Image (cartoon, rainbow, N blue to C red; front, side):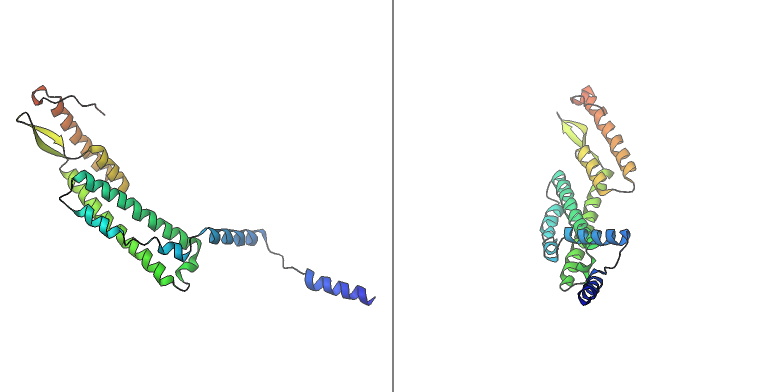
Length: 199
């Protein structure tokens, strides 16, 4: 009798498990998987944007050809945007990264990348708008003035799209109009140019 009572008592003491709802179980599992898939503080600190400064200085060098500068800005913009996205994703998956010990370094690194992205975007947009304002320049061929593209129109279109500018349609239209001017001039037999393929 005593053994039976002891067994029942043990079963009750070890067997009573708190029931949790399906929603609670799903939230707990999701939280665990999100946390396990998120970057650690050490990994985030490797994303610092200190290296952007030197490349940004190169892109700002006005003695460099404009196509090279546009390409450098585009690559830099992609790089800092990707790093910022990784910071935001990691912190949203594991908010403790912003509050645990050593979090000040993570936040400083993230803020540095935000600042770098703002600087790159500002300079990139300024250069793109400057070129789009005057997309066609005077060139000389066989001693005669002809109209020529200041910079490859496709490269400019890609830059406009990468920046996601609010007035990108107007900027594209300006390039389309400029391109027609260059094509008309290049088709003119007096210019000595070859006919360009129309769009």
